[in-house]
Length: 66
Image 1 (spheres, one colour):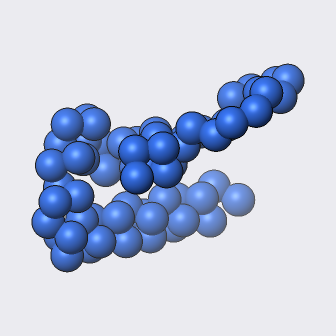
Image 2 (cartoon, rainbow, N blue to C red; image 1 turned 60 degrees about the vertical axis):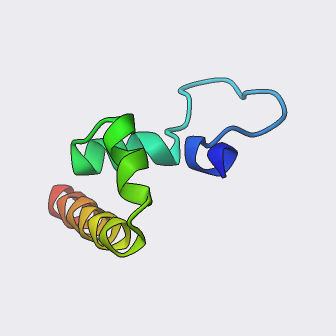
């Protein structure tokens, strides 16, 4: 579970800008730190609502920029 949330994979890293990990995106979208995020994951329904709201906001801002 930890590997999935933190986005760590085996293998070499490619050249160029590092890809953003899932957790980095969640931190940016929700404006919360890792400790708060891990605590919120224990409350599944609240976590799901928070992530859905954050993703909608991120997609809305992306479409406004384009």
